[in-house]
Image (cartoon, rainbow, N blue to C red):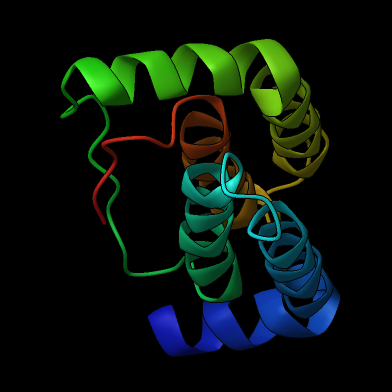
Length: 119
């Protein structure tokens, strides 16, 4: 299921999302202050390329990760989380879309608090 799910995911938008996350990471890494945020974008890009078969563990961060997550949520995390939640609801309407909705829920959690997340 993982291989087939990842292939369908890549064909129907996963590749475009991955390229978008990678470009955002490159842009953020131009400045010294943005490097930690750019690294999180690269982490999310890796999961966005092939989310099937991967589990995400959230919330293992120290004081720096807490500050990074707060800044991330304030500036762009909540918008990205809402985007993935909306996609999950729309895909969850059909039975065929349920596995993809589950992956969007996984990405919503990661888009909300990426610092300290492991997968």
